[in-house]
Length: 322
Image: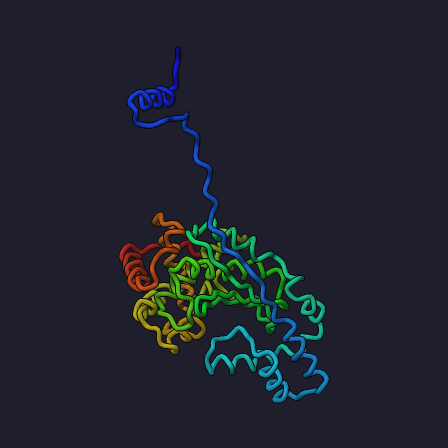
């Protein structure tokens, strides 16, 4: 009589009185934790503002006051500088809204891709270990093709504009929903005030995850907003890494603005984003996974980035420029 090794082991265990035994079967796969996406659509509030401004034939100053009363939402930092930016963006976008009313009127129901499906793809890369909820906030912006993510009192929100270029939406949503999943995992607070080191890791992870999931024509397309920025930043790579290394622990509002939206000491805008692309790319080249990078605690991010920059400077690492 021929017995399989499994059956033989089971018979021995039974005879010894250790266990009762049935032939081993593979355990069913454990489903990934569910990250639920709910939608909050602000387009009705915008339509109320727009209708009031149109009926009143409001001049720019009065229109701005109506915007603040009825709507008051823009993809800008929550600072006085952000309010000034929002006013300029509204004035520039106002003549364009009439042509976009059909899209705006459909609201979130007319927007693609689906946020839940994108979050599932991101979760497959970052491998979160606990369930969470993310709010996808759809809003009417200023045709800037922008999106952003923040956390407030434990609530995670990703905001995506409705009126922008549909061809950019999957790219923008994937980047920002990566931030949302990262926050849901507990490694990232999601606040506006955070260290430059945190920004480097968070933005680098979002860009590299998006690179994995969304097809874009060049590496530069995952990082730059204006043509030529990536080439300019790459030409100043050593300076940018040196600049960013010097302020990794800083969480001053002026530094956050300077390194994420303004020009850094090198004269190149958004130095922290370029540093993030390079540093996270370096970690991936060394064999780290996106899931491992997503688990770096926020408090350790400045030190981990500093160590990576020092290693790159020591070996003159090549980041595969275009």
